[in-house]
Length: 353
Length: 177
Image 1 (cartoon, rainbow over the protein chains, first blue to last red):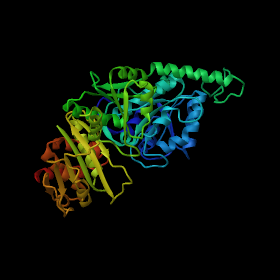
Image 2: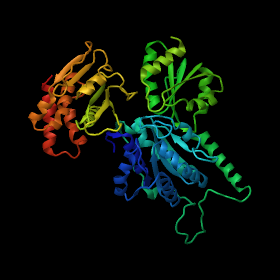
Image 3: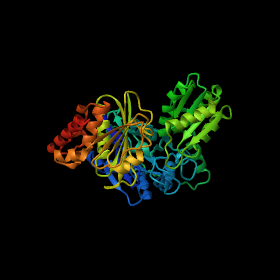
């Protein structure tokens, strides 16, 4: 597929997962992510895969748990309310160290909220989301191209570290259309890496057990410390971010997803008004780009965090800069998308111009 | 070149598909494009609108807060988007269905009798293409040939006869302005 085609973010994501080798999808409908299961329902049978419209979100997450434990590349998707229901399963999967990939196409919350684009699930995604000590690798695309190409990376990292990985995108990214080209050839499930923990036929090998509990004294602690080591290695090696216009900036904006695009559109306005404004866009929300923010804080007086919520990522930014910069926040929660001029006004206010 | 467009009308008037067609046409001209539909509880007879950006440079924000052009397919859309249009912006109005006139004097207003023209072509369904043809001629954001080339890509299930009517509607729309 070298020709650029116009695709909806949700469909690009679904196609990207299939091209990355996804052969088992279980989900339950919710706006604004319905195009994902809809696409999977006809696309997966074409490649010999399985699509299941589950009876509930809880069923869906446990179905992909089982399918992945047997070696399939799996996926589920939902929006905030459904992802909340899936947290029990995600925690079990993290405990059992089984790779899965899922997407949260965020809508306004809390509660049933609305169906408009929002970023209120940042805490839930980056802190694990369910009970217990665990993390989930979180990718935050900001274009349809990234919606389509990130699933492959998510699968590779999930396999590498034997853990859940996810895409966290607001409803706008799911619903918008943009041209896309895939940057990888379709992956044949036959080419997946060997896994020595999979369930299935025991003939000629020892019995294997996949589980998330261990009642023997001390054993669970040992296991969780092993997870901690894994998470530290991810924080060391898998951070991704994008930056724009950082050279000599007086103020650096920090934003992800749709908010980062709106922030980017404010840079030329600021430039025209004689202000040097840069943008740091975390691509991985966990692991979070702590180090680069620390470096920015050494040089830049003002950091403006823009989110489509009432302030979630801003806490990570504050943790990273440890008071060395002034951290400002501007948020539009529960379904409102900021516009360029709003961001520009904030910048002017902070720089007092 | 930057064109932020809002198209708005009743559900069933082909607002969303016209928006996708415009975005597709921009794409095959190697321009940067984004399309974003209003995706509330839309239904036939309800309101529908979408935002399209066609630009020679990377589109930072797909959110069109201050459109350069508003294509108005029904009366509620006129009232809803009149104030958002940029000063000096273009308002293309389907005069077959819109009796009211915009109050603003700092915008360019063009009336197109889209439903009547579409009916003469043989189906009301192509009124959206009449407006899009007029839009492409008026703004030059995309070439009408790119719109025509995009038709089979966007209307994948359309029969030959219907594609022809859409083509004709695009051309007739151009002749109107």
